[in-house]
Length: 87
Image 1 (tube, rainbow, N blue to C red):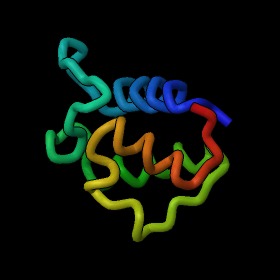
Image 2: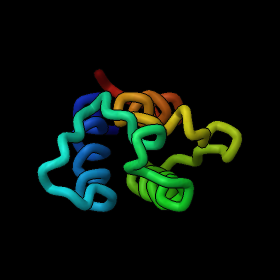
Image 3: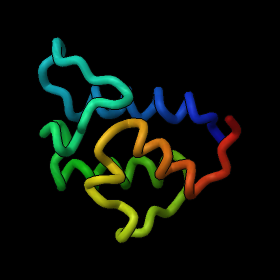
């Protein structure tokens, strides 16, 4: 399984490639994604699917909340809670 830092980097790269249209927009590990308007509810579903496929995990719908997906750091903690992670 990936380390915490590897998960953070992969999620950040995915978010930037898939959802950030303005290449000058600064997006880091703590940038608000949903409350900041970068990721919408449809995008959140595709991000959840990406994470489940990438890390071979299942994130229950009740855990896939806008709060849980509001930053790369929060997403990383969510992934870690469903997968064995080496820090």
